[in-house]
Amino acid sequence: MSTEGSRAPAPLRVVVAGAGIAGLYAAALAARRPATAVTLVAKGALEDSNTWHAQGGITAVTAQGRAAGDSAAAHAADTLRAGAGPNDDAAVRLLCTEAGRQIDTLAAWGVPFDRAADGYALGLEGAHSAARILHIGGDRTGAGIAQALIRTVRDLAAAGDLDLREHTAVRSLLRSGGHITGAVLETAGGEPAELRADVIVLATGGAGQLFEATTNPAGATGDGVALAWEAGAVLADLEFVQFHPTLLDPAAAGGRSFMISEAVRGEGALLVDAAGRRFMPGVHPDAELAPRDVVSRAICSRRRELAQQGLQPAVYLDATAVAAERGDGFLARRFPMIDATVRSLGFDWTREPLPVMPASHYWMGGVRTDLHARTSVPGLFAIGEVACTGAHGANRLASNSLLEGLVFGRRAVEASGRYRTAPSFDARPLAFEDGTGTCTRADIQSQVSASAGVVRDGAGLELAAKQLAEWTAPGDSPDACASLLPVARLLVAAAAARRNSVGAHYRTDFEQAPAGRERLSFVKEQEQP
Ligand code: SIN
Image 1 (cartoon, rainbow, N blue to C red):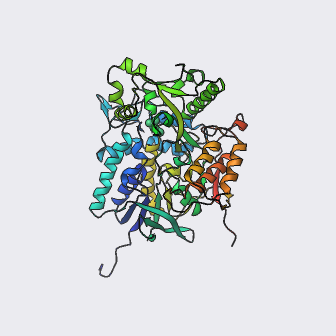
Image 2 (tube, protein in one colour):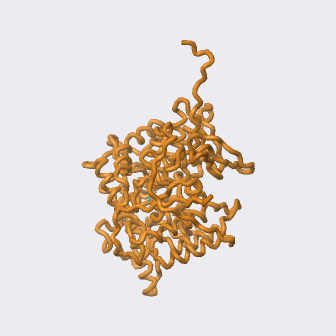
């Protein structure tokens, strides 16, 4: 048969937005597929992601690193227990059973996981029943993975297999007949321009910047959630924000925000008050290694009690006994980055406890997806923190987020050919009025921190909703927080709508209401023609 005149089919046009672990991995996998044209768009440089800062590690039970008796099933059971009810069971199963395959891929791409004599070195973190956290360079896990993925992506770009656009923001998503058709991109200093696409994969990360105290970098402003909301995608579990228990208190650290990994508690560090008294044993049988929501609430409540007694309302992470027991140099060897940073900020943590406080860390909620990372909008996929797969429930198990970015990043790529169909999810329609007042990032942070922090109540949420409604989304400015206002409204509305306490969502006015497994989903109300 003659092929004269026949044309090769048009390639599948895939745009990946975001360059954390999920976006880099998905872009690299997609660029290796036949008949696929991949563009990777990053708001800053590739090195600017939240992934880069991840310390603790990545959870995986693998053939090359498995504690005695541990299994993917045990990892899944811990994930469900920490998640406190509203997890999607199938997503949890996938997350845990697919872990080994992703670790093998990363290792093959040059990720240098730390090793012990008998395989990968394994760490322990809160709410895990076994040591199963892989790490790189002790506490530089995120940077170790990101460096290898960035190298892979830059090689693909240099070979012409991937179009890489750094310092480029996605301003809006384009649709026709409900389907994704492309995006409007804006490169720093340039004019907005349209890029056509069959598939857009949102991998834009979370919105830690909604809060005054956060472990997240300045770019974590919820951009993907705002874009998906405008495009009519269903969002879910928005009320579930995880607070990491141990941000080094910025007030004692010259204003610097620096997280102290949970792996430090995994090695035996304790939480104490100014008098050196532990308080976690009275709160949970796992004490300092209880799930994060429990530890964060306990720290807030201890600080409140101390203030009521007229004492200094401070809580500390005490690693001095670990330093003494494990010998000279242990902390510096196991946690070289934390050691160097706290010392540069004036703390000798082998001799003195570190002042710590909870801070926003991870958003379990986001753009609702099915098990193939498809959102409710045909052609729109979401992976990593911007997505809500349901794997984390109401409280993410430590070190499950890098893993989720990999597992569902791969599934998005594998499902990308099926972009014309989308799942449907039940969702409540929701609309917000824009006000006329101007606001800054700090204004939004102050409202959200006061109302939707570790401890919430209906009156505070109502007050914040009213204030947020009086503002209009700031345009493009050095403050760059146009996404934060709609995303703040969504978070506050979801927290007000959930009238019980479950996982990281704790309402003093509904402390005892039965939690259940219900998940709240919202979709933008359609304007009447
Ligand atoms: C940490 O190292 O404590 C953070 C790890 C995570 O959030 O999963």
